[in-house]
Amino acid sequence: MIDPRLVLVLSAVLLSLGVVGVLTRRGAISILMCVELMLNAGNLAFITFARINGGPEAQIFVFFVMTLAAAEAAAGLAIVIALFRLRGTTDVDEINLLKW
Amino acid sequence: MELIAFFVLALLLIASALVVITNRNPVTSAVALAFNLVAIAGLYMVLDAQFIGLLQVIVYAGAIMVLILFVIMLLNLREEARAHPVGTFQRILAPVTTLLFAIVIGRAVWLSAPSSFPEKTEGFGTAASLGKELFTRFYYPFEAISLLLIVAMIGAVLLAKRKVS
Image (cartoon, rainbow over all chains, first blue to last red; front, top):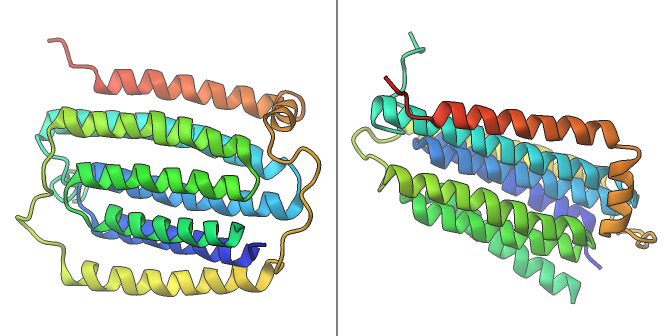
């Protein structure tokens, strides 16, 4: 049988890979994809805890996180489209109007 | 048997995640992400959460990936611009700090979690048990999340709509 700690460490590794992606990528869509990666790492940890505790609660949380991820993807991609229309690029370094 | 499945899926997960974060072409990144999401669904199946696993394939690998790919194709994005490369600080310090972060949380979960799964409880992960919970104990959160989806949908349509002027 699988060791739960291995699954949790795998989820930590996936979360860290998502963080590296968010920090180093510059395309807005790539950053959104890395955020999806991080959300999935959290979901994996939730499912592992659900299996440890045997109850349905953590699985319900995963259900909610998935819904949230769908909403986030829809709104985020709409913002990217609006941004592209306005500035002609999705490079986040180019979008610095609020920076100064 | 389960252990073999776990290690194969873990390898696929890490490899596809690396492709997602390193590939410059957004389409390749998106396809690797779809691969990653399906592998996670497989891992859910191994962990006996069958309903969530199927939901993962339908919602994530189906709907969300199609949305992302659709936007990439719509915007006709190619390779990420090489005009101003990522700074040295970003390129070197990001992986280093994140590695430390991974070590900290990896150690924390390793020390706090039990070393073996207990016996599977009756009806764990089935659509019937989850549906029952969703429509009784978690009824109000369920309604709230459906409201959130409607708000996100209206917001997305408003944001992406071409201005008529």
